[in-house]
Image (cartoon, rainbow, N blue to C red):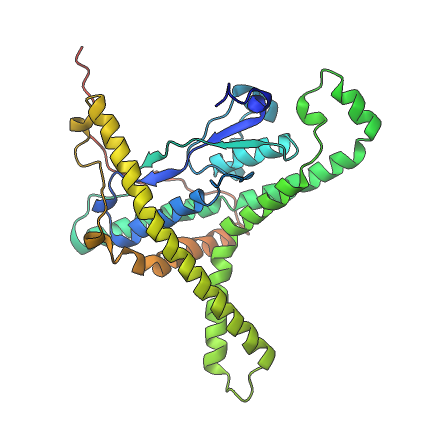
Amino acid sequence: MHFQYATTSSTTIYVPPIIFDRNAHLVPKLVRVADILWAGAGLSSHYKSSTICPPTSVYSLPLSLVDLAGGWDAGEEAIGEDLHMYIKCFFTLNGNLTTRTVLSPASQSNVHTDGRGIRGFFKDVNVRYRQALRHMWGALDSGFVVKSVSEMWWKNCRITTGDRFVLQHSSCPIANYLRPHWMNTSVLLHRMYEAHFLPTHITLIIMASGLYTLLTPPALANSLLLQVFNISGYLRLGSGLGFALFFFLYENYHQTCVKGREEEMLRVGLADRMYGSFSYRSVRKNCFDYCFFPIAGVAFGSVPTIVALLSHFWTLRLTYKVTKKPSWPALVSPL
């Protein structure tokens, strides 16, 4: 792909979707559904005409672009390294970053402890919450985007048409004369809202509207507000149907990914060393998974987002502890 699109190769980032297909059968339903939703959030950017596709864990980019962007940031504000680097490259190119989907899903493991029974259930849920909190600590990148948008606008205001012509015919880096791509920037802002604000807003709106309806006598209720609640109810119903469609399509996606990976491992003679790491799904075993998606969305989406955002008022530091995942037998070299 890098050589096929030579004209944009130096300004392209390559992003695959992800799939949790290694140990999903070993973790609680809440953890499994939370990771399905996490994979779905990444998949939502991989449609054909998408111009904004932030990476989820896995990505690749040319070293020339890394150099142009000034390398990776290593401060506390860059804890969401994949998204942060995407944003940094995006604004280095004034919004003209090209994203290409790599149709080879990156195989992931769900977080998992060694606990058994009810104790193991709570241990797995706890480590998944800690992972979600780290993910949502990356909400700092929404502030980074706002800061970068203002800097891009100010820099563009200072560059006149004549200056741009001179820059374009000089040895200055390409980023200095590219015009800001405001459409891509607006889509990126929307993506930041989806990632760091929408989970909280949905939960608070549902709670507030429910409490208002419950505690306010019908005679005293504001008619216009009740109409808004009714419209919101229909929108939530539509969203629920959208989730149902996603879950239906996900089953085929999961089956294709895990089957393709196992066939590849069999072909190269490594499948026997990966026993138990092919997590197939079936309607009989997993039909009740999706009943838990509202609980998983709140427990691993809304709650950690609220905790992370409130914590940002006091500190940018997060005690980082690597989440436990299953370990597989080490490969022994025949030599």
